[in-house]
Length: 162
Image (cartoon, rainbow, N blue to C red; front, side):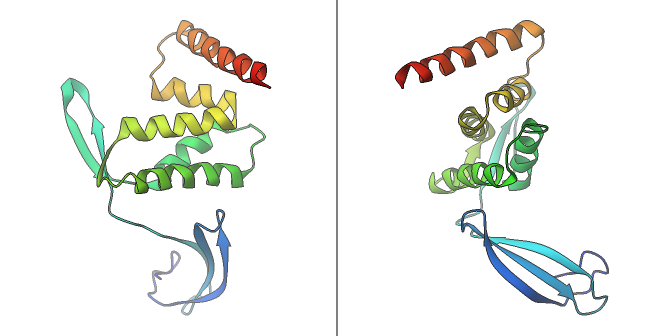
């Protein structure tokens, strides 16, 4: 593993432990050249997945699946909420597992967004609304009001089931 500090090609694993509910391995490494320590994560990848993004005027772009993009979006939606990092990692790992088990090598970004929305809906209603505001491109305050009303309806419906 290349050192992120000095770019030397050799490092030693000092500690390994499971992470993200056993779906990844966290490794502490030390560079044999500069002595710096850093952490890496190792995850199973079943296949190469390409994300199909819809652009303006029906144009499609393709790019490799990047788990870090989902992590960043979910973390931003959950910012300043009392949500453990572990629960965010579980959500992201769950979305990644869903994508990998679909059996498709190409997945529309729209499908990934809906998976993230569903995970956030179950995790935190404020984070759900935040993510939806960007994902569904809310333009006006009225868009927030209408969407929040549907979230309230779902929350009330869920409470009535109990």
